[in-house]
Length: 429
Image (spheres, one colour):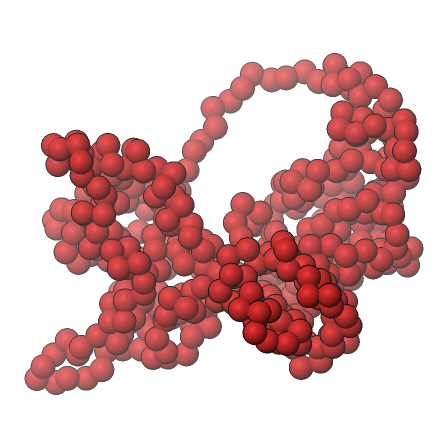
C-alpha cells in the first residue's frame, strides 16, 4: 500500500462522516479561542484529543491513545493489512513545520543524558534515533502492522486540510548532524529532518503540508456566537456506562523489583524439571508473575478464587485477546496462583519475548532491556469471566497503579490480616 492512499482505502461513508464532524468541531472554535482578532483568528480550533477520539470512533480503529504506544491507532483495511497510524493536528502557519513525534522522559536520564555529558553530538543523535526506532519496532511487532503512516489535520483560514505522510524508521546509518548548541540537536537521515530538545527530552520531525501534499480541504464556517449552535442540542437521558475492570501485572518480580533470572519470563532458564533426564527447558517457556496480594485485593477479577487450588487451573481457563488480533487460551496456576500461563508455556513466552520484545530463543530478558524499550508491565482488561484483553503498559505503570490504589490495597490487606500496619509487600511472591 502506498502510504499516501490510506484515505482512499477508508470507507467513503466513514470519510464523509469524519468530514462532517470536523466541520462541527471547527464551527464552534469560538468557544475555545478569539475568532475576531489576531493572525490566527480564522483558523479553526481542534483539540488533539478530540481529533484522536473522532478518528477512532468514525473509522472504528483500535484506539491506542490512552497508552504510550508509538502509534495512536491501528487501522485494519478491507485488504487485511494493518496500518499503524500517527495522528497530528496543527495550525498551518507555514508549509513545513516541526511536530513532536516522541518523548523520552523516562529513558533520557539513563540512556541519553550520560551520552550528552560524556559523548559527542553524533553519539547523542544516534542514541535518540535508536530509541525511537526500538519503540516503533516494538509496537510493529505487538500489533503486527504491515505499514505505518501519519494522518494529519492542518488548520488554515476557514479550512481544515487532511495530509498524510510517511511514518519512517530513522535511517541510523545515514544520520547527519546539521547543527547543535548543546540544547537542541538538528539532524537528518537523508529522508526526514529532526530536532531533539534536551530540556524536554522531545524528538520533533519536520512535516510537509504544502498544497500538493493536501489530500482533502474541508471548508469551515466559524460562528461568531457558537452558543447559538449549543442551544440547538437536545440532550438524551444519560445511559449507564459499562466499566471494564483492569489490573496490571509486572514483567519483573514485584518483590525483587527486577526481572528474575530463572523464573517468570526467564522460566526457560530454570533447572531441568527431571534429574533423571536433565534436558533444558523448552525455548521461551515463561509465565506472567502474579503477586499474591493482587488475588487478595481483587479476588474475583478472574471470575474464580485463584488462591483456591480446586478452583484455579485448566477447568477455569480463559481466552487472552492479543493486540495483534490473535486469541490464546490461558490459565492461572502454581502455588497461590502466582502464574498466568498457557499450555504449553512457550506459547505465551514466544509472543511476549520474541514477537513483541524482539528477543531470540534463550536470550535472557533483563531489567535494562525493559528500560530501553520503555515498557515493564502488562495491562489486563476483563471483558467477561472468560475473555481478557492483554497489552503492554509503559515504564513504571505497575508501580504507579499500586501508588494510586495504595489506600484501598493496604486497607483491604489490613482487614484480611486483622492488623492496621500491614503493607501489601508482605504478600509478594
